[in-house]
Amino acid sequence: MIKKILFIVSLTCSVFVLNAQSFAWGIKGGLLVGLQKWEGIQRDPLIKYQGSMFIESVPEDNSFALYAQGGLHLKGSALRNQRYFFPNGDIFTPPTTQFIFRNASVVLGAKQKFDFGATGKKFYSFGVRADYTISTNLDDFRNGTIVAPLTFPDNFFVRKFNYGVSLGGGLEFPFNELVGAIVDLTINPDFSFQYQQPALGNVASPSVPGQIISIPERKIVNVTLELSVGFRFLRKVEYID
Image 1 (tube, rainbow, N blue to C red):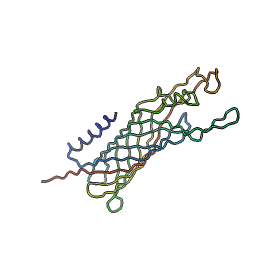
Image 2 (cartoon, rainbow, N blue to C red):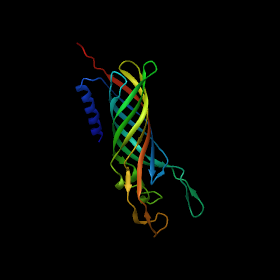
Image 3 (cartoon, one colour):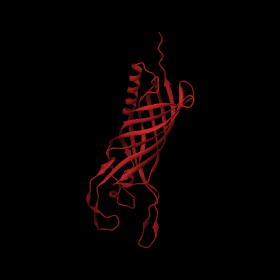
Image 4 (cartoon, rainbow, N blue to C red):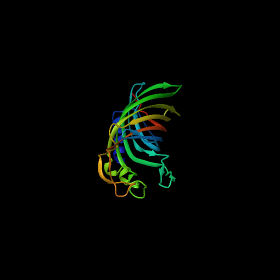
């Protein structure tokens, strides 16, 4: 999947070159806050990281610039400050539990730019996004957990392909004509389920030996907040008569 992301970004770069247009490219990365709803209930945020490479057109004025972006994003959620009560009255507080989905993402979209300060620019962006789940940490819960594995998500029900949008804005600060810095903040909701499990019956109870329970249907949706900083490089095309 990483090779496919590089191919898409490289193909977009080739289109700009063949059309003899100036374009900018760069790398960026930073903080990711993962949010998930399980059956409509918001879980605790997952604090992780993300990184991307991007390419965009450079129009002569501040009209819309088209961009393509691909990268790795660690999405998911967490359980913090959970407490378990034993029959003797003791309380056990386990460490934070993290549910991690390592997703490769591709975004295609547009940016509207405005002058900012003497030489900088501010922008708003919108893009459509496709995700592929490379791996998860869900198998870590199959053994050695104090709760039965089936009460956690299981890799069998993870959806590999997902889609959504990316909305955000940011600032560009040029160091010189060809090199600059970029800072942006985006919100990235999914429109599809990262995880979809039907209701399960005849499951052994994790707390009462010999008892059979049912686990309700489970649907998990991703939303991320991402703060990125990076470098932007301009490939400038000049026409000579």
